[in-house]
Length: 280
Image (tube, rainbow, N blue to C red; front, side, top):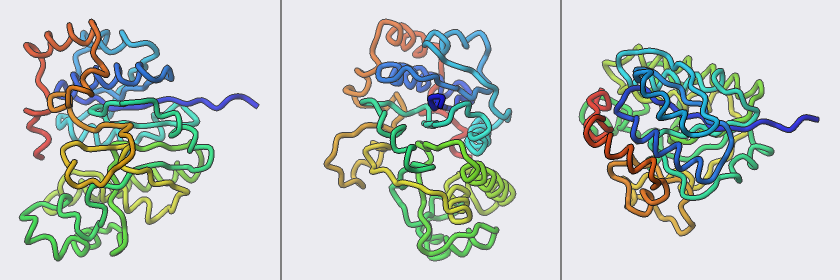
C-alpha cells in the first residue's frame, strides 16, 4: 500500500497579502517540509521567484476577480479540486505556525474534516455575516440567513475557515460542492449579506454532516480577539496579519531572507492594514 500524500494549501490574491504570505511560507518551512500549494491571482509574475525561493512551493492560478477578497473566497470553496494530496491542511496566508502541527495530519486518519469554531460560534448571533447595524440585526440573523436559502438552525455553529484540514474522499467532495453552492447564494444576496464564507460553510456542514473534529482555539488563535478566549494550552497556530504580529511570532520567521524582504516591502508593498477590499 502506497504512503498517503500530505501537504498544505494557502491563497494569495493580490499584493496586500504578499508580505503575510512570505512569512507564512517561512513559518511552515521552519517546522514542515511537505509541499505547499499557493492559489495565486493578481500578483505580478516577476514576484513569483520570491515565493518559490522556499523549497517545494507549487503555484496554481486562483479564480480570477478584480475584487481580491472575492477571488480568495472563490478559491477557498474550490480547495478540494485544487488539492493534490490525500491529506490537506489549508491555512489562511496571514497565519503563523508557532510549532509543528503533525498532529493535525494524524487526526485525519480518524476524521474527514478538522476545523475550529469562530470566536462567535452561535450562528443565530452571527451579525458579522450581515450588512447593516449589528444591534438592529441581532434578533433577525437566523431569519435572514434562512430566507436566502441557507439551511441553518438555531444550534448551527459558525466556524472560522482560516484552518480547514480534510481528507480526499467522496463525503468531503460532496461537502465542498455544497460549500460552493451555498456561497453562490451569498454572492446573489449582497444587498443583505457581506461577502463572507462562514454562512455557506456552516450550511454545507448541516447538509452533508461530515465526520469532523473541532479543534481547540490553540489551532487557530486570532490575537485580535484574545479577550474572547479562555485558553490554557500552548498556542500552535497564530492567526494575525504580519503588521500586527507580536514580536515572539515575528521571531519565528526572522531570517536574512525575510529581513531583506521586509525592507523591500516597507517601501514597495501594500499590506492588509490598508486593503480596501476587506470592507466590501
